[in-house]
Length: 581
Image 1: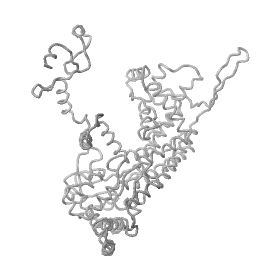
Image 2: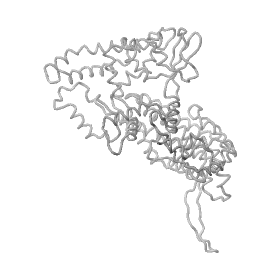
Image 3: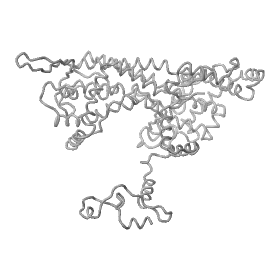
Image 4: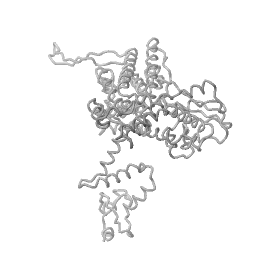
């Protein structure tokens, strides 16, 4: 049993009560390993967000940077400032994304988009500030906050460092993430963060020349050397200065109070040291949360049911494998799958017709002693079946399991497959799968959701895997999910609820229909037909045209005060009144 849940369901008392209610009074008859597989996973996106909150609140550097980044939204988020910003961007043919504020009440992955929008629109934002708001006052703090070289350096570094954790967070909110997915994602993200820390530490030893790797720091690498120039990224940058303290002093002659500002210079070395600390904090914070939040069941299933690992064992040339590959494939995941498979089989007896008879249950448990060998054969057959999908296109599923990395690459060739390799980049979370045919090379990603669905929708795959394995796989897949998707579903339900009340079945059906529909922008023809009915009505079915809440008198229209079209506005006149009758 499992549900993807938020932190309040991880309390020890809640879990103990739930287990007690589920297992009843007789604990002796529980299946072996019950405590391992009876889990309520902590939703990955939620515990990651808690980690990011801890990092933000404990890091003076990150809080200060967020304060500086929020200044753009304060100046150009709305009203006159927004119009100024858009006008300057249009005049200079620059990108002008809508400014955002770092929302502390939302997921960090959503708030993180603020930094990306600033990066894309930075030239337009600074040109708008320089053209209208910047002054010649040397003590003006704002221009150093948004145009300082230290801000640009930190912006690129923070985006690069947080991009992989945020990518992992977004992936964890998708429909096709599984209980064990995080056990494969985090080790890769951790390795990337550690490599980033090493690169930044090395950069400190040679500040003048960029030494960080492009694949790890694409934005910092691109702009690092340019930041030393006066005109960088199209903006006249200023030296990095930060206000440390402000005070008021009384002039000894005029007796007037004047503001005294204490400044601190922000050098490239200071910025790099802050980025090193940030990468270290993110690594340690995430690692600590991961250790406390991910169950043992997730690790067990990740060592046997993670499909990219399985398909990695069947790479080779012309369908032939080395002795080492065969030996590794025979060993992979056997112990873990055996423990889960055996547990699941015993659990079926425990909760099934023998559950009320202890002697029958013990007999059933003893007769299942051969399950271990049976599980080994089952799993070995499934791994062989995967190799058949890759090399022989079993069930015609190869193109569904391995869609193209880029849509323009087309689909798999019909020519014989010569070579199949797995390409794992040090700076990427997901693997790439390279198929070499007689007439070309095809690079793909593995669509795990589609691949798992073929175990139940494709007859050839189902027959090859066997009923028992498909049942066990179904249980494993049911132990996962995204709490964010559940929240989204109930948000849709709120839009379908009626204030005067309605039957629960009606509300459920309306929610399911709304949930299953495509996004409106994907239904152009349907929207056009609905809009036509709404605006023009239909006499045959007795549907009157609807009134658009814009009314213009005939004189105003005659003077061309408004550009009116019948499909956009409704002009109230005698003809429309007759139509209603």
